[in-house]
Length: 157
Image (cartoon, rainbow, N blue to C red; front, side, top):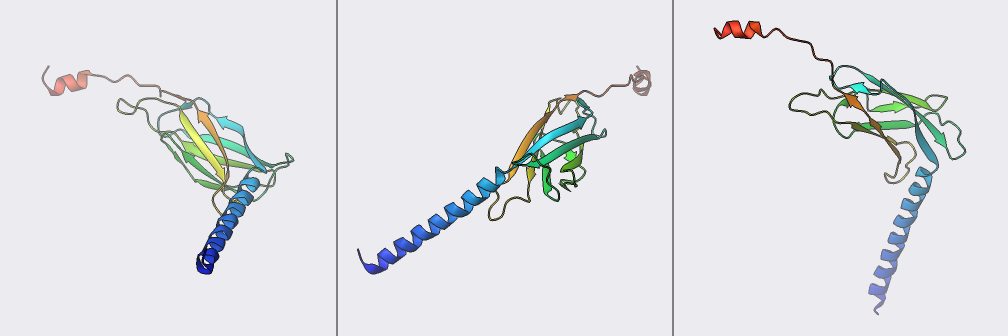
């Protein structure tokens, strides 16, 4: 093997080893934290697009101690939206998100929503974060009875 090819192979292997070490470090760091659900209120939630759901989480370290100052990111996988997608844990490791479910209608059928949370503060090199998902049960909004005689009068029926 020529010395130039040998040198390139050594550099390539060193870079691969370095990337593996970096990924391993972030993976090990992500396993040091745990996101748990404290409360989800109301549950089941009303799928009306207006009624807020308060989701409270707790972030702990490997020893079960609360972690302060970590930024958690929230996303809904099946619809709806969060008031703020990023929140920071307090001194007790707690964080609260306000979520607004989608509006169930004839077009959008009723289905439960998967809420996904990740700790963005524990990844140093590449995005390997502590993650947790929770299912929010939804129920149909109460419907109000409408007077159909108004429409009948318009069309002369």
